Amino acid sequence: MNIQITIFFSFFFLVSELLLMLLKRSHKSETKSQNDKKSLRIFWIVIPFSITIGFFLADYQNWHNLQQTLAGIGLVIGLSGLVIRWLSILQLKKDFTVDVAINSTHQLQTNLMYRYIRHPSYLGLLLIGLGLGIAMNSLWSFLIVFVSFYVAILYRIKVEESILIEEFGKSYIDYIYKTKRLLFF
Image (cartoon, rainbow, N blue to C red):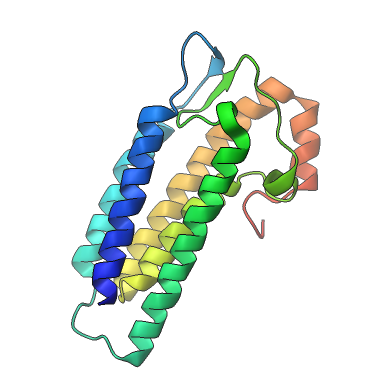
């Protein structure tokens, strides 16, 4: 039963990301600066492929009580990540775009979720990868999904922070010293 729920959650997540890509791209008329460095393309290659490979490596045969419990915990972690991701996106409103861009009215967010974590949207994405990896009931699935998400997110953060430093200068650098990048670092 948990594998069907995991598949449904994966599908729901990918559809939500597709909607973001369609609805939240930067518009040239409103964009002040943009420098994605192919990080969006990397997301769209790494995330679906790692999830697909993870499902191919998933252990569908051994679903004892421990695996059922772990899969349930993984799904709760993934769902929590989805909630965190969407709350952070909603907080940014017009300033959120799927491509790394600064619009002409962009404001540096340092309140609510952004008070403690510079990239709660990516924290949510990382939790989704962690949860899916756990829910697939295979160490190999976990490693493929989680590590792929993690590496892609770290690259994206590097790209994003360089444009934010360029745009907001000392304000953003001060903000870096007051907050964590994701959660623990």
